[in-house]
Each structure stands twice: as structure tokens, then as C-alpha cells.
Length: 165
Image 1 (cartoon, one colour):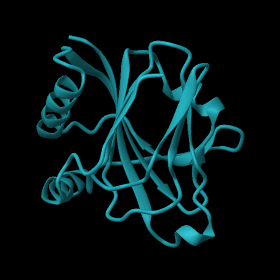
Image 2 (tube, helix red, strand yellow):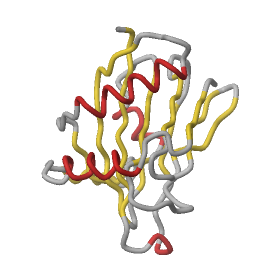
Image 3 (cartoon, one colour):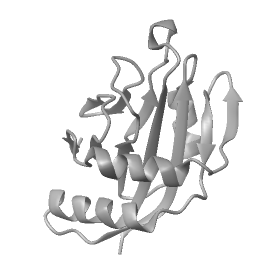
């Protein structure tokens, strides 16, 4: 499995600006016990951020030209999660998945876990961190449960489905 994680790839000022632009976006509650529980927005557009993330992907992938085909903004709070079964609903195909953590603080919970026949990888929950995962093979994912230790915070993420430009 090809996996890349860049710690603090997006600076704090940019994250704050994106969170401010996202503040008015409408999130829908998704709650299906055997799949996941979280809030989702698939329509909010942020071209400035998408450009920054496409340049990041281009550099990390040695010049591969990709474009975002879909976007998913998710918000998770205490008690939220997304299971493997939910990945089938969320993942519509594409060559790569790029995930940006927009949260205001780190935690030891809510990591994204990717699993493939040839191994796996865990994305730590860290603001500004960007994961880039090759999803062309049999790769699936889940997001770990946010327990009571998580407190009253929230994890906010953007996932982009990337396809050839």
C-alpha cells in the first residue's frame, strides 16, 4: 500500500482561514449504527485550499497531474466513528485519497486506519497533517471511535477523491 503522511503540511493561519470559511456551511448528520456516525458536507467549495492541496499532491507524487473529483468535509465529536462498511458508501473510486485534518487540537483518538492486503497505515489526528493514499487497489479505511476521553472537541477533516487531470 502506498501511503504518505506530511506532518503540519498546512500552516495554522491557513487552517484558521479555512475553518472560518467553513463555519457557515451546512453539515448533515449521518447515523447508521453498523456504518458510522458523524456530520457530513459534500458541497462546500474552497478553491484556494484545493489549489494548495493539489500542489502538495503534485510534489509528493513526483509531478502526477490529478484533480479533485469529489470532496467530503466531515465533523466528528465524542461518540462518532466511521466503520469499514461505511467506506463502501463514501468511497466512489478514484486513484488517490487526500485527507487534511482541520481540527484545532490533536488527540490520541479518531485516527484514520487504512488496510490493504499488503499492509496498512494509520493517520494520526494532527491539525494540518495531510495523508495521501493510493486507493487503486483493495484499500479500505475506518475512523476510530471518539470516546469519553476525547471531551467536547471536534475533529474536522476534508477528504478529496483524486483522479487523473
